[in-house]
Length: 443
Ligand SMILES: NC(=O)c1ccc[n+]([C@@H]2O[C@H](COP(=O)([O-])OP(=O)(O)OC[C@H]3O[C@@H](n4cnc5c(N)ncnc54)[C@H](O)[C@@H]3O)[C@@H](O)[C@H]2O)c1
Ligand SMILES: O=c1ccn([C@@H]2O[C@H](COP(=O)(O)OP(=O)(O)O[C@H]3O[C@H](CO)[C@@H](O)[C@H](O)[C@H]3O)[C@@H](O)[C@H]2O)c(=O)[nH]1
Image (cartoon, rainbow, N blue to C red):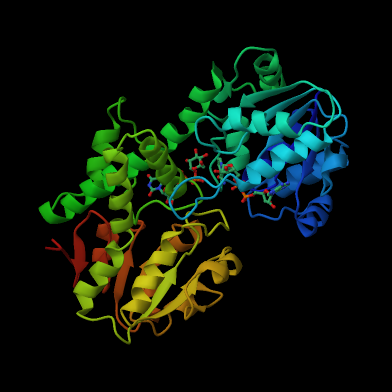
């Protein structure tokens, strides 16, 4: 059992703290947001993440999981401090290290015993060295501080499962005992550990996200070409994925990636390269293709309707992916902006993310509390997030509620054969359209 503090209780910090307590460590989670801390003390997760509340409550009751807004209290008697604060993007695409710098100072002024500092946040190569120098500069007590880079690979919506069944735990440490200590801390997860130096660990995180984003933009480009050639992206992706070297994962064509990580991390890596006089052309193209892909549904609707002025569009799903309330960089934002710009009226529904959506979606969007309400009287439906509730909506609901039978499906939720037996005009991604019951090429 190790005494651990986790600084920052967002998607990563809270899940990390809860998972570490579940394998037997004594964990104090620290956040500057007092209201959040109060909720967490009651066992309520401030984020929607399946399975998280139950595990929080269990470990609070077991006396292994604590929450505080007071750094001095949180750091008392801790052997390990995890940094899990946000590293959002700045205007120029670089990572904003404001919160990281603050935590480094908080650690320096509060720790009274030797400590291993573990960086979970996604940070540019060289940041762990920077954190250590900030800590050393502000250190109040004469203690030893060692750094470990331990990037996080969890996905929102399946974060708990990922924490216990991830593919690997990357531990980047230079000379010293810290790397071994963090390997021991993680032993009970039973997940393969990959040991490397600090800078390589920092790079593994960005390279992994950039590679996955590349897969998505690649398959989206293939989907766009499928639409022009009459091929079917679902079949193409399945056939490609059977090659073990390619694999089936991350070959789902759609409206482009969103979320709190891929958009910001791809830009940050391109910027890291640029700062070292390297133009990362491939990644720049991945980002451009993704931005363009956000427009694909609206472009299809414009083509089908001529003009979208005065048209009422039902947006089904707002979160950047199912099973999360996270709206950061959700394609729904760019899609709504495009629709409103084109003069359309936007009525939106999401099973969970509506409150968060209201904070980041453009002004003028109307929110309703069921999919049926959104569809009723609309000229078209846009399927934006493939929540299981939305995927399982029967096709006759669209026929029944829509004023015009137009569905633009950004997630390929329905089979073309099923749609062909309805009266719907259906446009999806990388597949033929269905118009008047017939499969037709879109160009
Ligand atoms: N969200 C993900 O799925 C995911 C996955 C892997 C890695 N990451 C990376 O992990 C990091 C955290 O991401 P997130 O989505 O959990 O962030 P988040 O924005 O959801 O949460 C950050 C939390 O840190 C708190 N905080 C800020 N400054 C603080 C301080 N000085 N002391 C204590 N608390 C402080 C904030 O109040 C907030 O609750 C980022 O670098 C991100 O790129 C995120
Ligand atoms: O085949 C696919 C797979 C995903 N997506 C989209 O890609 C985005 C990201 O999805 P996903 O990777 O499942 O979710 P995140 O929670 O953003 O997780 C990513 O970003 C995290 C933060 O760095 C990493 O820890 C994870 O390993 C990495 O998968 C979403 O908009 C998805 O709709 C697709 O369009 N097609």
